[in-house]
Image (cartoon, rainbow, N blue to C red; front, side):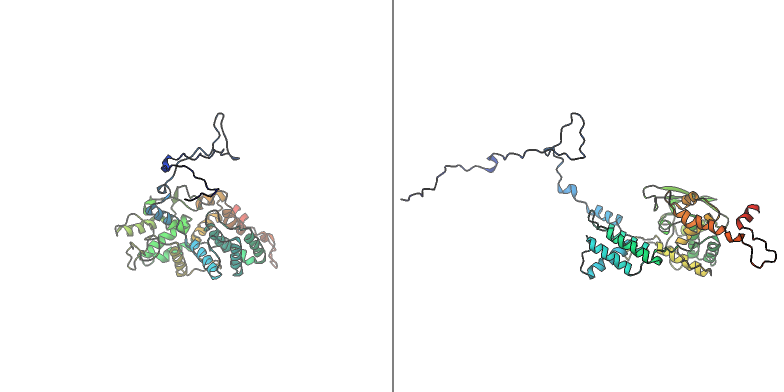
Length: 398
């Protein structure tokens, strides 16, 4: 016989199923109120008991098709890819974390770009692309980098200077188009139409190469362009009328190019396309490499063709670089020299309302070129000693 220890107790109990156990009391609900809460008279105060819908995994999981579509929509531009990849490579070489990067890493990379002597505008563009590529809500503080940039700008005046593209005005554009069309080759016909359109549309090359044939309505004296979006109108389509000119022959050149496409049964799709050496339009072009352009020309292709025909026509610049941007600059320069207003140039080039670019880059230089205050000073040693009349006064009286 055993004897229980004094501190041992025997408890009579019964085993029951879990679902028969009494439920645990629910925690008391608490008010859900913050400084933005606004209640109307009689409306109850919201509490933790006011539960919203209960979401399952299917409510938060994207399908493969939607995920692929988002990846395409978020496809980086060439400049963005280049800037981010350079940053990632720089971080890897120094064993730093690139995503999300720290403020110290971001600042160090900014100084690294400055040490290379890059232009201020280039550094700002690269750093902005890198910062926006960071995870949402985890972007680094850019105040320290901007502090260094201000000092860099003050010390490096050349780094602050922006190189404007050489303006391809009509005296340059006409011989370029004539040279392109001289041999009657399809690629020359395409390029002449592309040059005329780029000038008259004041086109950004990225806009021009994204147009489809269906976006144009060609009449005898004008072309009506439907533009889904541009740099300053991301969520607003536009209908733009391009009146033709006798010297530009935009309608004739565009019809000639579209007629060539039509002989190959192409009446829809990309307006400006790649061509095979024999002039046959390429279809399914460059699908073997990593590109989303397909049959659409790349902006860089337009840039290369502008340079080619500028050289082929035997033209010379004033030192500014030749590029496809010169077509846009050329149209705006011709307008400014013809005394178009800031607003007229702004509308023609689809600049943002109130943009300082038309006045600062085109109107003001054109006005300055028309006037020479030293024209009022007599030519030294002139027998007559007469003043050379001001050019603007001659135009006014003539």
